[in-house]
Length: 221
Picture 1 (cartoon, rainbow, N blue to C red):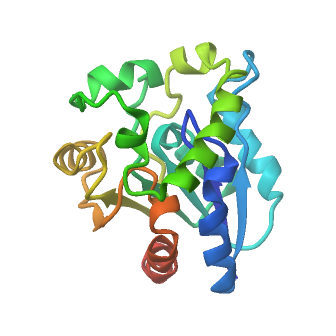
Picture 2: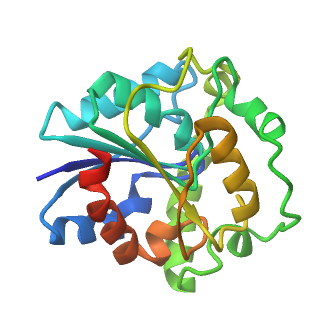
């Protein structure tokens, strides 16, 4: 049995993963959806990674799965936990010394031009589910204080020596397929794995994402 540590994005929460958790457990694995300390103004990048350490508490072979902004935390958590594999899902890929706030410009990520949050993030998620998740996460965003962590340089000198996969979601409107292919090639030197789905693929296609995560375990670990 593998334990999947699930790291949410900057405007999200652990609840974003609840459908994927059910799918992975149905397939015989365990999951830990981590709440990052986004409301703590004192928390830095390593503090966020240590939240993953505390949540997983040394259980079974560990795969770290990081979404969106969580790409800054996934590799750090992988180092801290001794993870067997790291999977980035529509995630930002940091460079050494780069801050999360600076990533948007330095990565060359193009603006989508989409201002409607549903169309940008949830366009392929059932509307009622999207509204529930958005309301839940929106309440947390009101308490969010990420100024320090947003300005903190990513502390590793290189990408960690952990087998890494990247899931490109072809229908993502925030991080488009064209951008992601280039970003992954430039920063990781690998080819991303592709699947249908938008930015919140864990909500729109949880079964397919679970199948992918289980399928790549032998190759990743």
